[in-house]
Amino acid sequence: REGCHILAIETSCDETSVSIVKDGKIVLSNLVSSQIETHKAFGGVVPEVASRKHVESITLMIEEAIQESGVALEDISAIAVTQGPGLVGALLVGIMAAKSLAFALDKPLIGTHHIAGHIYANNLTAEIQYPSMALVVSGGHTELVLLESEGQFQLIGSTRDDAVGEAYDKVARALGFPYPGGPYVDNLAMEAESAVSLPRVWLEANSYDFSLSGLKSAVLNVVNQKKMRGEEPMIGEIARGFQESVVEVLVEKAVRAVRQYGAKQLLLCGGVAVNRGLRANLTDRCEKEKIELLIPPFEYCTDNAAMIGAAAYLKWKHSQFTTLDMKAEPSLSL
Ligand code: KG4
Ligand code: ZN
Figure 1 (cartoon, protein in one colour):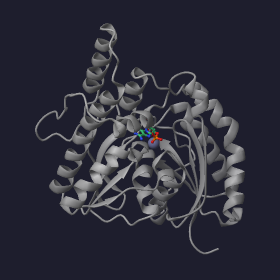
Figure 2 (figure 1 turned 90 degrees about the vertical axis):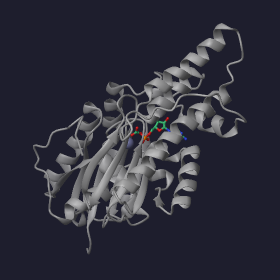
Figure 3 (figure 1 turned 60 degrees about the vertical axis):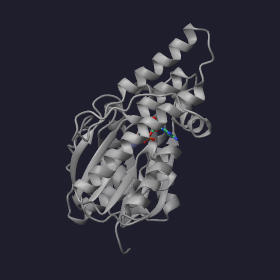
Figure 4 (figure 1 turned 180 degrees about the horizontal axis):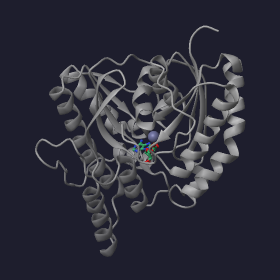
């Protein structure tokens, strides 16, 4: 068969996902099994439980993904898998499955960076142009990454404490919502008529880093004060105040980074890229500033294997394969 068919596996956190991607662009199948319902009872992802869940579903999902794609085993060009960053036990399940397949089918193995996946999700429905600036926002990451050319990443800023999604989840919990609470806070914020005033954390004048733990503490203080005084917590106003603060800092720093590095595009990606406040604000701002903004569709924003297939394709083109002794790298850098 013509072209490159990558079988991609993603198990870095609480989603088991298997996908077949053609030429880094055409998604022939993309199965995602979320463990959220299991972890909800614990108020967050329990690493050991995540690993066990991955083990339960990975084999069947690989079979199904191949079947759904209509690609014959001998036409699979390579096996790609998330090598890191992520939960080590969770990563290992995907890596073991990928190694076994690569060995049994005698196909090359491609270890892939999870964030490279989130970024290259943009190539599934659009065309990344270089240099590009990526704003990666998820439950585990908050990063500004410069792409000077294809596959060349330069981390120019990241969070010094909580990731954006993590801060959303903690604020949501304080406001009485279950895990993962980001969408609840987003909805409340969009509907509230006013906002409590909360700080903006800019850090040093020229820094592209982020800090969210102070803002999160400020929210918790407001909630606790209200409780102590026996007053209504005003959760809408608090959610809106929190969202406005987060969004303003993310948008300002992203736009400044685009300008300073002469980026042709801004790529928004990661699970928090579905946040309505962030999307609306960034879309407006980019229109005003004449910056092209790319945002992947919802299913490629949250963790999925298609994005890993898209990123792995760049390595496949240059025959950058990984040996079978590859290890899980929980804090792999870009
Ligand atoms: O990328 P993702 O699916 O998993 C990670 O790799 O972390 O992101 C999940 C995170 C969770 O923290 C969730 O609360 C957050 O994304 N999230 C949101 C929204 N939808 C999901 N945060 C803010 N607003 C949303 N609408
Ligand atoms: Zn992710």
